[in-house]
Image (cartoon, rainbow, N blue to C red):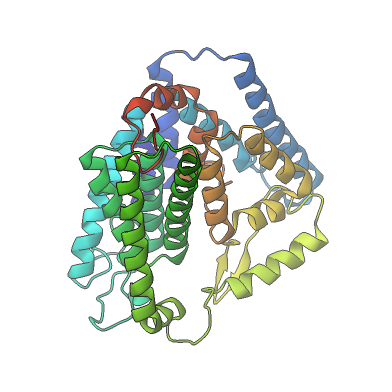
Length: 383
């Protein structure tokens, strides 16, 4: 149920505030007993909220009503409690819902429409010969970026939870194909980086065991498969490189940042002038082609909103929880957030996933207990 409740607010027509239903359900799941370390995490999160309130008081000229004293960062507490309460079964439910939405992406793409909701203001039909960038389906979301991010979340969850049955192997391909059909370049880059890391790690393990004369036939076969796959991908990149360049640059013959080249300088300028306190812990937005836009970069956004002190405390909370088991996933989320406003919303699906990875000890322990079925894709077991 909790998995469904954190998925629900990501859908079209569903307001962001529906995330609060998850915290209501949270109280019906029983009491939580905090260890000493979790209490420290909680204290640091409360410190961020207090500092944000102080920041707003300093910028009292922006306060018009009593509610303006309450920062949106108060939702970090909601994110934290949801994240530590979620179970592996909840995350599997979340994965299933994302897979179902990905199926709608396939239907929309091959029907040459961007959404099945014909009354939606952004509804449009695709030109069958258009570039992939202009044929991006929305799934059941407001934009293609949202469903592409959910596909990335689904993939990261499968990898983090080490779900390696045939069903989840198929789900991996569904999520990767969704990222491609939505033509979200950030998502495709993150997926590519992750599997490059996996390949390099396996090659390293192979070389290490080669020197120890402990290579098994299964290991040799696995490395051979990697070699074949890498060779095929390289060949395809060579053959179709012109078409790929056209797709990624939208035939502009230059790398296109989708407006970030206009938004980023405005944020850099504001941060330089308001380095300590930012925008008084209010959301900072800038004009862009007739509307207001956020930074499309989580780190620029948090610096602009809160200033350097609160921002560093945010980062410290995450860094202190890094270990060899979660660092790859945290780094991938950070890289993705450089080109997208994905984390530091207060509460969002990606914020919840990040907090699960760094705070949820129960899921982590279960992953370690189930390591017996750990696939060769992730770790070679040498005997």
